[in-house]
Image (tube, rainbow, N blue to C red; front, side):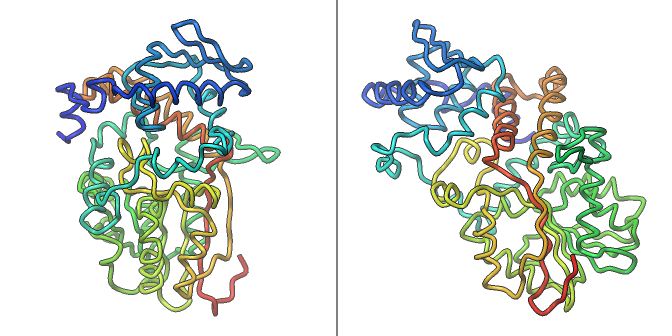
Length: 414
C-alpha cells in the first residue's frame, strides 16, 4: 500500500493536526477575505454570524478561527487544508470555486500584491523536475492505487480530457468512454499513425492510446515512470502485445527514431525549468517528416508567470512538481528546437464535463474508496481536487488543447 493510503489508515495528516497560532496573519486574512468576497456573486456565512457577498452559491465557514488562521499562514494551501479538515463547506462546491477562479486576478487588492513573494509559499528543491524527483513525484500520484482510479474513470481508464461531439459549439455529453476514444483517435490522426508507423508515446497512462494505435498496425513504444500503471497496461495490452513495448523510462532517456510521437497531458508534470528539455527530447527522436501530437492543459501566460515559483495546494497534495504551461511558454520552449505548432484545437468546456462525470462517479463510490483504505480526509481532498479542476475549466481560467507539431521545413496542410 502506498504512503498516502497508509496515512489515510493511521489518520496522520500532519498539517491538519493543529491550527496555526498566528493572530496577526489571521486577522489580516479575515479582513482581506471578507473584502474580496464583498462584491462577488457568492454568499459567505460564518458560524460567528458574519455574512458577506452579493448572494449566490453558499460557502459556509464552520470554524472561522481555524479557517482564517490557515488562510493567513498558508494562503491557498491553507484554504484547501481547511476544507480537508472540515472547517468549511459548500452546497455547490464547483459553483463556489468557479466564482473564485473567474476573478483570480482581482481577489487580492493591488495595494498588497507586493507582499506575494513573502506571503505565498515557495517551491522547494523537491519540486524541481529532475529525473529522481520526477520518478518520486509521478509515483506519489499515479501509484496510489489502480483500483482507486478504476472506481471513477471509464472503461478506457483514460485520465485526461475526453472530446465529446458538439452541438452549437458546446459539448454534447454522451458516453464518456466513446468520447475518450474520440479524443485518442483525433490525436492518432493528427500524428498520422497507421500501419507500420513507429510510434512513441510519452506517458503511458493505463495503455488505451497504445492499444488503439497497435490495432491500427503501428509499432508502439510507450514510456512511463509509474510501475503501477505499467503493470496494468501490460495486462490490458495482452491482445496486441507483439506491437507494444512498455518501458519504465524518463523522457530524457528515450532513444531511437520515431515517425510519430504522441503525449497526452504529460508536459504539465515536467515543470517549467524542464519544458525546453522535454521539447528537445521530442525533436531529437522524431524522424525526418515526422509529426508530434500533444494534448496539454494550458493557462493564461500572465498567471503562469505569476505562479511558476509558488507552491500550491495541488502541488502539495495531488501533483507534486507540476506546472501548467501557457501557449507562449510552450512556443518559447519549442524555439530551442526545429519544431513548431501547426494546429491548435481548444476544448476546455469538454474537460469541465469530463471532470463533472469523474467527480459524480467518485462521490457515488465513496464506500468503495473507503474500503480501499482511503479515509474521509483523503476523500475530501480528492473531492476538492476534482471540483477545483472543474471550476478552472468552467471559468475559462484553464483550457485544454491538442497541438500538432512539425519541423519548420515540413509542409503541413492540417
